[in-house]
Length: 549
Image 1 (cartoon, rainbow, N blue to C red):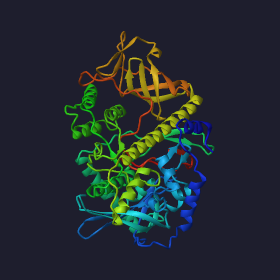
Image 2: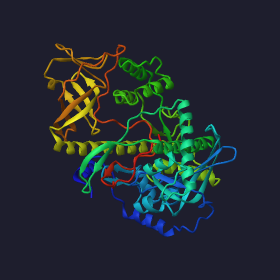
Image 3: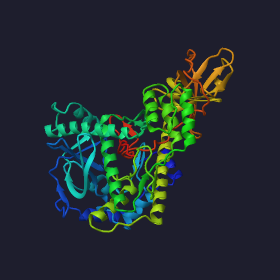
Image 4: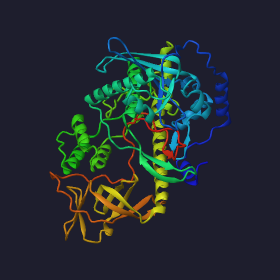
């Protein structure tokens, strides 16, 4: 059962967390009608080798992968996505409930699914060893990663092997070595998946795609659901493989629907305002980074790469995020700035995102030779609704993570931590703890050794008498001074006196640095979040995060 803090967030954000009897009856009816032996006119892909790659605690499997390579060196990639539209008929009780929710909500200690679990974790889920209905995106790529063909089919598949990200990474790095329980042909396929994905990734960045390194915070829980700590989510090569394949499938579907003038929920990310980019360029230059043409995606890529792994990385990546607009669902073809894509949509997560289900229905209509609906006022209203429900889910998740982390830190007042300065204002320093990914404020009044003033051009607090400097990227030692859970505030005090910072390589006027206590989501992520909690030894949450835009 969720704790009081979880229930309070659910109520505060007005998130529906129960299904009506009519919805559950509809789900049970679909379950009674489903048979693994009856595939009808679906393309029979049950013998094609297919794998899923997900977090260790996953239960709802939206997508599976099959990959082969022919004698020409061309890749044949199949992205199989759960055929949720088979179970959720338009205007049914299930459909109305899913549309109202818009998305599943993944909180640290529970999930609020968009669909009843008999579908989300069972019949619609692409479980290993079970025959499942899917919509398969069949794509051909040449050796350079250029898509040369695509096809869409309703299929029947049987997943051969379910991998965790950790297991998949181990196999990908040594596909020719023996791996317990993994058939040699499956291991070789994972090695090929890594090769193709890295080729697609390189091509994506060559066309100007941006990727911000702002990993999600995941909570660690013990067996009683008590917070024991937190960590930043991993984003290694196994995650990137799935990310690239999901992006490729989403883009292929969006392009196809656009060509057939279908009305569908696009994933849009408008170009940033030029003034915002100029302000970011001034901020970057104040840190000694060269950025003369911020309107160039490739210049932005370079700045992001230059700061990777450095103390100022968070401030720079978060600063660029604040300069960008938020991604939304839209009925209009406005393109996707961060992905450098003209046509993009969400297709690969219909178990937990209603926009994906709407896209599935339009694609299926075309596959059945029907004339799909075109853009309409109704579609615009749906896009706005789905954007609202997505942001509500993200806000609820962030808020509950804050509450749980602050509640945990109430038990650690006085403890020392290593930290990095990620924001500088005239009223103090925002610092992120190294051992625990949480941010707090060192108020300027606690810096009793001097009177400090802000040099805004370089984002530096400077002591008038001794000249000591605190600026972005400085490593400091702090201790927990005060926690106010109700006001969502964490107060820190410095316990060390580090040497003065090295002066910046260049000076220019700049806008104040970012200083939020919790980072908002990046413009695009691949798979949506499926879990925010990790238990020891195993989490109770449902999924990790796949970046998908």
